[in-house]
Amino acid sequence: MKKFNIILVALSVVLVLCAAVGPVWAYFTTYVTAKGGMPVRMGMTTTVSEPDVSKWTKHVVVNNQGPESCYVRAKAFAAPEFVLTYSDQSGFWSPGGEGYYYYAQPVAKGEATSELLIKIDNIPADVRDGDSFNVAVVYESTPVLYDENGEPYADWTQSVTIENEGGQN
Image (cartoon, rainbow, N blue to C red; front, side, top):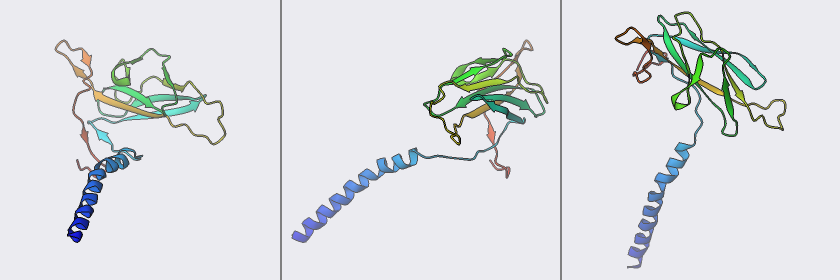
């Protein structure tokens, strides 16, 4: 009988430990850092260039290297303690849904957008040489579509085919 009680207690402990594995595993798989990327191809090629980073400002220009005109939108991410401010001297970039800034006109094949400035406003007071502050810029492009009146528009809900360098989906 004593042996049965020991086995029963051991099974109870194992059962409790197994029940706790799910939340612990979720914690360790939720908080990870990832690097790398996957090219997204929609029959067009666009690149983002940041020719100058000065005075805590990124200067973003999107180039259309694809076979057709496209619409472009961009969004920047930084650590939560930094406040990002967007500005545009040309008047073509404007804020829109989902935190993106949208370029008002289609970007023709071989052309580029005007410059979108993304600045860190609340610069830390104790900045030292060698400190780094990463501002990641994400941009998307979609082909120009035309309505029944021949007016161009962008459809940001179109499905995207993702291909890796080996050409597999």
